[in-house]
Length: 339
Image (cartoon, rainbow, N blue to C red; front, side, top):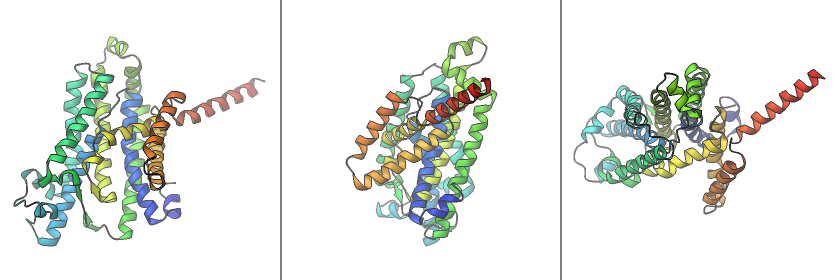
C-alpha cells in the first residue's frame, strides 16, 4: 500500500503530507517498543527527533551555502543575524558521511548516558516520564536561545538540496516519499524481530514483573536501556528524514507538545502492538491536518477528547479491536470444530 497504492492514488501535495506522517510513524515504532513493550513512558522523544533533524538541517544549510557562494560561505540566516564566522559545532556537518554517522551516534550516545543514570538508579514510572519531559522542555529552550547559530524560535528552513538532489524537483520529492516509506518498513521489520526474540520476551517480563526478572538473575536496567537507545535511534532517523520532506525544523517540532503528540498517536493506535503505533501516528497526524484546515481552534479539544475516550474505554488502542476480532473468530472456529 505504501509503495504502490499511495503513489498511484495521491496527488503530489497529499503524497508529501503522507511522507511527513511516515516520519512520525517511525518515532511511534520506537515508542511502542519502549513504552508498549518495556513500560517506559518516554515523554521526551522530541529531543532525539530534534537532534537528528537539526544535524541534517545543518548539513543541508552548509551544502546550500557552498553551492551558492563557495566554501566557507555562511548560511543565509547567519548572515542576516550578523554572524561573522561559522560556529565550531557546525564544522563536522560539512561532510555528508560525518552527518550520517552523527545522526546515528549522537542520539544513541545521549540515550545511553541518560539511561545509565536513570535506570541504574531504578527511576521508573511517573518520575521517569517527568524527567524525560523536562529534558524535552530544556532542549527546546536551548534551541530558542541560539538565535544566531540555530535560528532561534524561527528554526532552520529554506533548503534547496539534499545530498545533491534538487528539492524543488517533483521527482526528487517523490523519491523522498519512497525513502521514508522504505525506512519505515525496514524499521518495522527490525522491531518485529526484536519483539519476537528472547530479548523481547525479557522486555515484556520487565514491564510486568521487574522484581521477578531481577530475582532470576537479569539486570532490568540493561534490558530497559537497550529499548530506550533503540527508540532514540528511530526518533533521530525520523527527524533526519523530516527536514528534507517538510523543509523546516523549529523548536516547536521538538519540544514538550510534539513529544506528547507522539505519545497520543501511539496510545490511540495501540502501544503493545507493532502496527498500532504506526496507524495511530498516521491517523492523528492526518486528522490534525484535515481538521485544523476547517476548524483551527477545535482540533486541540478533539485530540484531547479522543485520547481520553481511548484511554478510558479502549486501553489497548484501536489495534485491540483487531486482536479481539481475531480471537473471537478463532473461538468460533474451535466451537465449530468441537461440534
